[in-house]
Amino acid sequence: MADNSAIKRRHANPDASHAELETDSRLSRIVAVLLHHPTVVISGTKLAQEIRTSRSEVWRLVQQLRGLGADVAGHPATGYQLRAVPDLLLGELIGPLIRGTIFENHLHHFYKIGSTNTAALAAAAEGAPEGSAFLAEEQTAGRGRGAHAWHSARSTGIYCSVVFRPRVPPSEVLVLSLAAGLAVRTAIRQVNASVDPDLKWPNDLLIGGKKFCGILTEMNAEATRVRHIVVGIGINVNQARFPEELGRQATSLRLATGSEWSRVELAGALLKSLDQEYRAIVTEGDARSSILRRFAEQSSWVEGKAVRIEENGSSSEGTTAGLDERGFLRLNTAAGMQTVLSGTVRAND
Image 1 (cartoon, rainbow, N blue to C red):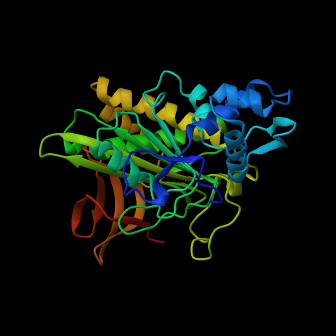
Image 2 (tube, rainbow, N blue to C red):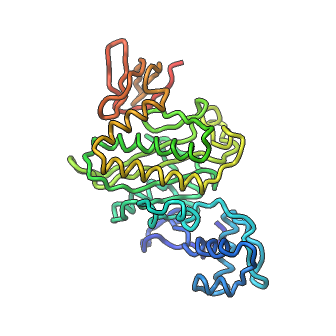
């Protein structure tokens, strides 16, 4: 990052790392002002008045926006104009798309962060409200299930973690994770109905057999109740290539469709879909059965799939036989029917 002057700490924590500095909200406000006057050059003085800062600070903030990839023409002497709407996951751009959701007033944007899940868990422990959403342009330590890392190239994917505080026992957390997968699938099809993602139990989405989305659900709970849950979602959106070690198993929406996607549009659709799924869980008595039914209908992995389950160095093989009433995977093996509580599911080709 070339200039940290436009970055502020999310919390007054002297131990906060460089990777956990939240993007200055004034960047979003500058974008909003320029968007409201798309055909007019806005003077530095006018921008300074609109966001209540100095002209020199406006210049530094515009430089920061350019560093994020925004196409802002002009300079302090002539004024500024936004030549193209930036595909940045800023609150001013996503906010209008998620009005009425629990996320509407709780968006946090980061230029670079270690892990959105780590930040969300820390914020939740400090009392962050339900619906807090943490979005990053880049992660330096993105996490998947187990010890797996999540490749998080700058401004090409959606790296998002949200905080929930449902009044449910810990046993219901798997259902929420499955609902998040459904929400991702719904959002993608709302943006492009020609894409038909496959849901892989418990937390991946595939296109053409390759993974483009992973979901990591983490919770803080007592024996009988959940204190908070963080659902982290990583979506490969506009990646044109992957590191060699990922090339055979990973893809992106751009690679799958041949065209670039609006990350802002997709992030807005994702948060709206998450809101709908979560509201159903906390308000509707039959939400669990609906989630399990829809997940099974939209997955080629839940029923009749020859798979291998790997966990802690051991493995078992069998054919998937649906989900049980809690959302765990049933596996028909040579030794009889088993219930898969965790582990990595791989196709047994």
